[in-house]
Image 1 (cartoon, protein in one colour):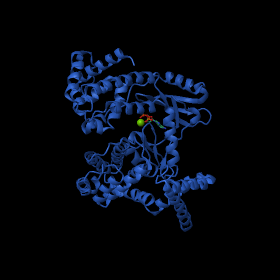
Image 2 (cartoon, helix red, strand yellow):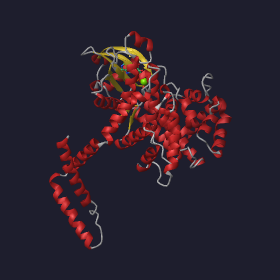
Image 3 (cartoon, rainbow, N blue to C red):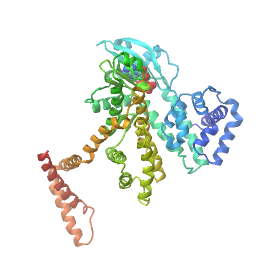
Image 4 (tube, rainbow, N blue to C red):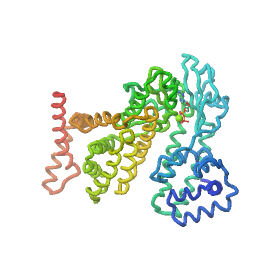
Length: 509
Ligand SMILES: Nc1ncnc2c1ncn2[C@@H]1O[C@H](COP(=O)(O)OP(=O)(O)O)[C@@H](O)[C@H]1O
Ligand SMILES: [Mg+2]
């Protein structure tokens, strides 16, 4: 980590923030304490003239980040997904940051492809277009496979982008350390966490194999989803810096006139976008977290096609169940139950007052459900819910914020297709179906089956294990001391009983 280098970068950043008028916006958003404010202005102000001017048409923060370059634009985009860190206002402002940069030449891209795939480009592709889209990390070309004649999209990382980002991310870490020094324990400021999160996101995008892997996992999960298609990954033409996907042929989802002209039913499409997203989030716990119109098309047969798998969201099964119950509680307006679920899951500290929490939840739910159906938004409901849970001491969870934010985007897409869509009506069957499967008797049965499967893996060792556990239990009882195996015996016996139940259930079902 080169100190002087980073100091210069830091000064340039401070100077640009001052020059564009973004310094106070940023300090306010982070609720920066006095010493940090003084330091920031001292570093930035005298060097104001060194800062980039940026585009005066843009709002201050967007203007500064765009002027500072790709890593900063990306950083701004990542921060826009973290209202827990920068507050709602700045997060909203940062959402408009456009990750668009001038493309690099086609020849350079072809050289990169040849180097990565270890073969001359014209051996692999019979056609290779000029860049069709260029962002801070990569750009995309349309190409045609030499052997099959199939059209594909080829994403290529910018040459040298890894080093460029490394330098900037180093400087971000350096800045985070300084902030830590001057504002230890400030409420919203967790600079190290934020930079680590950013670093993780960027590292992921700098290895296109991860995006390819996400694409193929997503395809495996959604293979049976009606009306949904994904361009397949061409693994033999992909590597760390190159990703080749089937070409998604269709009408852009943002172009209502073209969709109408092609004879598609926008009401059906609107509801489908929403149901698909919910299914992926609830059923699979793996969802496309960048579902704006630019990443979606409608195929000639009416299927929705999604691409751009750079940002995917994960939610573990337990959390999915908890949130399904929470949503279900909201549907029934059973706020006490919603509150209890939070306590049972340990999300809200046990010393808080359930009734008070339930009242706060009622204040979230009632206004939303009281709205005209065409205005109900689950994204907004979740947003208010997280505000309340944070107030009651629940830790912020990045994956849930990503879910909430994507939900808002998806609802926006659905509404732009069908302005009268009743989000709740469209979503209800998916939520109810998930609840039936995940919380009802069938869920109990499937949990027991999983437990029995785990037990079965111990197979022939099981009797000996049980015997040892029982002996330990008996001996432990004699010496009034529970050995470390003591807990296992009841567990095994319970599981054995569980296994029996499974057998019975399997017969019944
Ligand atoms: N498989 C594909 N089929 C057709 N067009 C694609 C495909 N993948 C990407 N594109 C085009 O390239 C653009 C940029 O690709 P994308 O993966 O969305 O990158 P970014 O992360 O920069 O948004 C897309 O908006 C789309 O126009
Ligand atoms: Mg995109």
